[in-house]
Image (cartoon, rainbow, N blue to C red; front, side):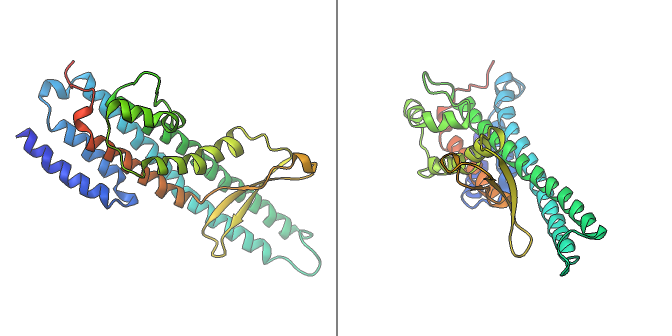
Length: 270
């Protein structure tokens, strides 16, 4: 009975992964947990092993929820900044910028809107990095630790995954490491180098706004720096694009779990 139910669930979920959209990710996690639960006895279901497995993927779900909330707030903040910029432009005249009380008021409003937008973009990067680390740990939780090749973080996963999968004899999608590498560059590196641990001298954080006013990115640059110390300008990637890449990566990680179920360290018995 349980095995038959699991087979139906697995086929349905695998089809969903193959054609996943951004809104499917939480359903894919739910299906993964349910497909494992369907095989268990009542005693196994209430045991610590199943709880550990479930919580490792619920942690991924939790940070995905955070990113969803931040993405929605970022869209609202982008609109507010776009409107603030237009309101400031509407006050400009031939007398020059920011000389009237109204202009100064509009400039202050724009500055506040920009700070809110920057907060949301930087928050997305910070939590996206945490999510990537959480995915790595969830994979290691399911298949177990391997000597000399920890998956305790996204960085560790990229450094050790080839050795880890060889030791565990895992079948992995051909593009999994490509996706992971892209996210290290687009999320982790920008987060580390321009947000959390920036060593850019005389740093200025600006905003690039698309012509339609609906897509914003951070611009990190420097001013008044000697040429030999000048660091090239860096730009974030729009959070909507990053969100899609993160969700695609989560689905790919879950596919690894589903494809290699027989190689889990769990017996689901205490």
